[in-house]
Amino acid sequence: MADSIVIENATIFDSTGKEAYGPGTLVIEGDRIKSVGPSSQVSAPRGATVIDGTGRTILPGLIDAHAHVALTDWDFSGDPDRNHPGAVYAYSVARIIEDTLMHGFTTVRDAGGCDWSFKLAVERGLIPGPRMFVANAFISQTGGHGDMRQRHDRSDPCARWHPLMPPPAIADGVPQVRQAAREQLRTGADQIKVMAGGGAASPTDPLDAPQYTVEELSAIVYEATVVRKPVMAHVYVPEGIKNCVEAGVRSIEHGNFLDEESAYLMKENDMYLVPTLSVYELKSKHTVEGGTLQSTIDKINLAKGRAPQSVEIASAVGVNVASGSDVYGPDANKKALELELKAAIMGADKAIISATRTNSNLVGMGNEIGTLEEGKLADIIVVEGNPLDDIAILQDEQKIQVIIQGGKIVKNING
Ligand code: ZN
Ligand code: ZN
Figure 1 (cartoon, helix red, strand yellow):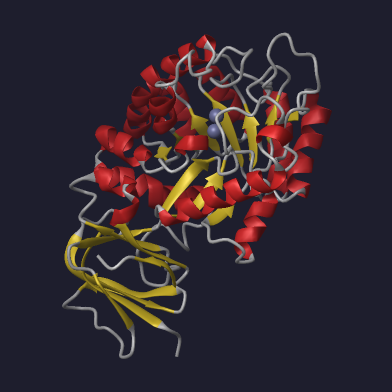
Figure 2: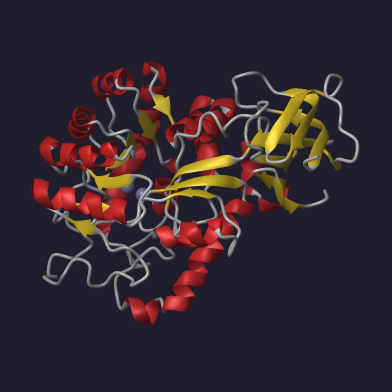
């Protein structure tokens, strides 16, 4: 008989839309959830490993749909070999990947910069980590959000990129973007990441302008779609969002200037909005003295001011609202801040659902993870206290006491 684990007497929030209840019991057999329900109705199999859920809440494992686990620093300008020697870089990424899991994120979708080989290291058991969906390099037009050269810089756009990091694919025109997409797919991308509009961290582009033509975006989507992979697009403004809708992109990343018209178009096409409230919250504290360009600070504040409204519009229209943090570098462990900021707009229950059930659908694993239901893979976290009463506890690594991934206990702090 497969190994069994029982978590008893816990509050259960299953992310199906049902209210939290308790005391509840969840039984895992092998890698799957065997049964889950009120403790009076679910019995523990003999010989099972028993975990006491008293004072604790069971949730589906969290999913971050916009992570950058391989961006170990805010700034990758400068000499990569001196600032980030190969082994130091690889171990730094490994640490971020492991910490991400230990903070309760059992799945991440990387939004660019993480090479496929880090996912392989997790799958081979070399490092503990979440299930990973990687994009490899992001695809950007010249002078777009992936082009990090300053105005005076006429060097190769990839020259300063770290050797272990897939350099941004700077591509213009249909033949080049087609090749860039094929290259990401060849090297193991689970999804394609394209910059379809300006951004804050890039030095020469306005944030509130679209990038790439519909023709270019469509070529990228075509290449991904024929091998059944989705495209995620970084973009802020309605004009750029509409280009993505027309091209067949699956998710809009950030989307801060979403308006009703573009929201309805997204809904009609069953697309996902991945707001990333955390990154603006954290980066708005950066200063010129700390090395950030004034133009970048201005762009962050522009995006931050409009972020909550886009979530409200998307929710009101009925767009799938997913959850991504976009945090990286020194803030890599603040991924759960996204749930607190989201909860302030849509409530704690919906914030958790967006980071579990909705995100599971976005990554194409809605039948396997994202809710606590019989037959699903046992990706589960057990939290001290109740995040529906205080969502901020999800940011406390010590309160994420038990983590089970595919039926395996990867963390167990006896509270
Ligand atoms: Zn972005
Ligand atoms: Zn990002």
